[in-house]
Length: 326
Ligand code: SAM
Image (cartoon, rainbow, N blue to C red; front, side):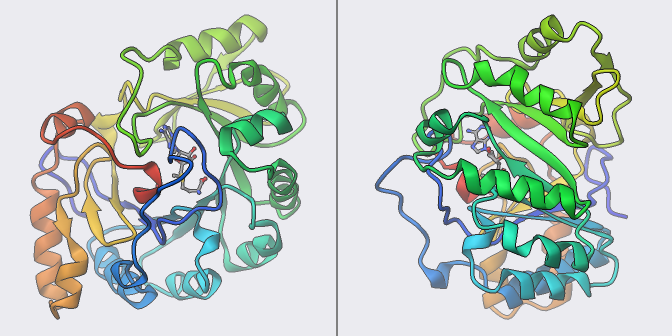
C-alpha cells in the first residue's frame, strides 16, 4: 500500500476514457465551441491498461471508469474485460449519464461490476432537457430500471443548482422509498468549461440536508464508510439512502484516497489541481514500468493537503468536468 505525504493511502483511481459527451449539461460544458481532444491525444486502451497495471502493483484496488461519457467511446466493454483481468484490482465501477447504458447492463453485471453511478439531476423531462440541452430523460430512466433489475448497486448523482433543480431535491430523495438506490446530492463546482461561478455557493451541503430534513424530519444520520465523500443519511422505512457530497466546501480531503487520470493521460492527485504528471508523454517516450512507478511515487509524495491548497497553486479553474471525469 502506498501512502501520500499526508499519510493517506492511495487505493482508488478515477480513469476518464474520453472527454466526449452526448449531453451538454450547462454546469459542465458550454453548449457549443467545445474543443475536443484529437484521437491521437487520448490514451489508447493499451496505454490505459498498462498504467492501471502499474498502479495496481502500487496498491490501487479500485478503478472507476468515467469521462466525458464512457459509453460514447467504442470498445469500452472489451476494455472493461481486460481491466477485470488485472491482478490486485478488486473493484471496477463506472459513472455514466445513462443515455447509452441500458443495453450494456447485463454485460456489466456478468463482468462483476458492482456499482454504477448514474447522473440524473431531475425527474422532470423538461428540466432535464433544459439542464442537459438534450431530451434524454426516458433513456436514463430505462438505465435506472435495468441497473436495479440486474442487482447492481446504483448511486444517483444530482448536482444541486440554484434556480434550476432545487424543486427536485424532495422527489429525488423520495426515490429511496421504493428503490434500493443511494441518492447523492453534489454541491456545484466551478468546472463548467467557462471559469465562472457564483461568488457564494447558495446550496451548500448544510442547506441541502436542511431542506431534505424539513420534508423528512425523521431523517437519520448513518455511519459513513471509510474514505466516503458523502455524508450519508436514511429516512426510516425507506429502502435506499441519501448522501450529500460537499464537493465545493471540500470537507472530506483529510481521508482522500483517490487519484485521477484524464483522457489525455494527465495525472491529478487532487480534483482541484492543474494536473501534476504527463503520463502520456512518459508512456509514449518508452518509459519502463520502473520509471513510471518512480514518477507516480514522486507525484504521490507531493499531494496537496486539500482542495483549497491545490486550487491556490494554480491559475483559475477554467476546464470542463468532462475533461476530468468528476
Ligand atoms: N458522463 C458521466 C456521468 O454523467 O456520470 C461521467 C462524467 S461526469 C463529468 C461525472 C460527474 O461529474 C457527473 O455526476 C456530473 O454531474 C458531475 N459534474 C460535472 N460538472 C460538475 C460541476 N460543475 N459541479 C459538480 N459536479 C459536476
